[in-house]
Structures are given as C-alpha cells and as structure tokens.
Length: 164
Image 1 (cartoon, one colour):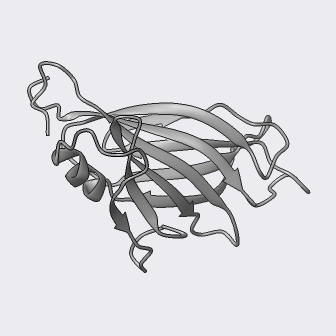
Image 2 (image 1 turned 90 degrees about the vertical axis):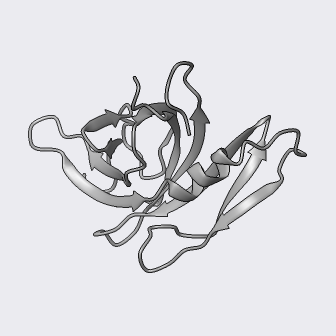
Image 3 (image 1 turned 45 degrees about the vertical axis):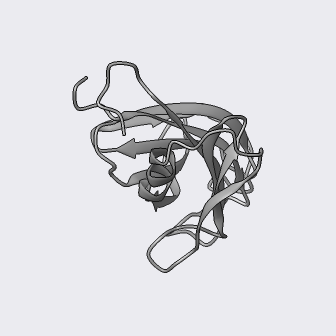
C-alpha cells in the first residue's frame, strides 16, 4: 500500500474494423497488461466492430507502459492474436498531478500527438470532464493489417496510498 500511487481505470470502449479471424468475423476480447497485472474484457461474439464498454482497473505503483492485446476467442484451439498496442500513461499522470479544480467541462489540459514510437491513431486530448482528468485514446493495432481500439483513462486516488 505504501508504494501505491493510485488506480488507473481504463474504459475499453470499442474496436473498429478489427481483422476477421473466423472466415468473415471474429469473437474478440481485450487483454490489458501492466507489469505483473493482467486484466481482460468479456468476449463479443461475431463482430469486427465490437462494443465492450467495460472498465478495467490497474494498481499503479510506478508509471509503466500499458500493453493492450486483442484476441479472437476460439472454442477448440489457441485464441488467435488480432493485434496489440502499447501506450504511455506518463503524460496523463502529469496532468493528474497538477491537481486542477473547477475547470469548465471539456477543457483541454494537454494533447498527446501520434508519433512513430506510440500507437496513437490520432491526437489524444487530456481533458477535464465531470470534475476529473480523463484521456480518450484511439489506438492503432500493430502487427495486423487493420484495427483500432478506443479507450478512456481516468484516475482514482486511494486514501492511505503514497499518491501522485
């Protein structure tokens, strides 16, 4: 508990134009990893444009990169990989550390731009929304011909933790 900075909530919203692994469709799910932690969404049957709208929460002791992997659930064989993306939470944590208050809803605090070293498909705004700092991201999946995943980051302070 003394090393805990807080909790990172990742809302896995949806996948867009994912690759078909079962002839014309897939049964996708998302796995999120950070350090030794591993969380996954439920499976969406027969979709290359799935909507999960699931919250996955990671404990953050140090700001490690987060890996997102998409798989196709198979009943009788090993699940097929449908791509992966890595993203850095450091810019988001820097915005949370500012301890901003009472900003107008939708205020852009900072922007992360797509580069060759990140998986952002487009600019990602870190904004003030409903009294907290959030970051919406569209991640382009790597090692596949197509596919994007839309996620949203938010932060939860934990009483008694080290904090940011």
